[in-house]
Length: 271
Image 1 (cartoon, rainbow, N blue to C red):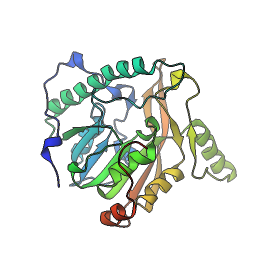
Image 2: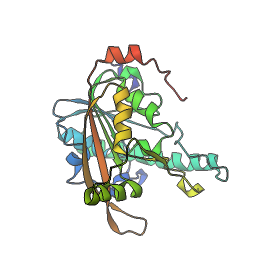
Image 3: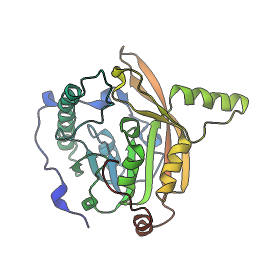
Image 4: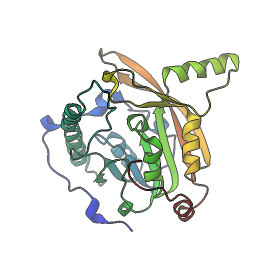
């Protein structure tokens, strides 16, 4: 049953206290394809990793009832712990950005007159007190977490109908997909690639093939899936406009929540 005590109280913030993640990644006009063209009208949605809330407020425009979920500055970013990286200092620096993103959410929440609710926590401890949701969304979140399967499990265990997972197509996978179209090569199977090579890569852990995501959510009861591809504008570090190719998996639950909880007694928390 839903517990209203878990929701964060809205707060008034000044624009100068905010950071906007979606000023570098521009999803304007492409939100529907980013979310797999799923009809969210009347659906209760758990949005994992809301950041500044752009997708949250866009889903509200689609008439969804959204519970936005993300870190607060009380929690640590899932840093890749390179031996030559000052992990503690990196985490502390990231906490400042997390606070500014939280502020941006509340700034926009007020500006839009949003009714969305917000819960703070990690992907490894999504509280059952949120109650059942119809849809869970993972918008380019799994690449940033050490244990993507556990993150999916924690959200899917309270999801009744659909899970939507959107991830970038890494360079290797993108080339393979082009070869597949041109020469009938097989698109990569259940594939996950470990990304970090040097301490500057501390923010990103993985790239995925669509099939590995399908396998992950299939274990969790979402065996009926569709895969779509899209491109979205972003600004690179040099300020140039580019396009990010992405895939979206929409998984539909094919057996019930009670069966999942009974047959998959995974311990909640880090493993």
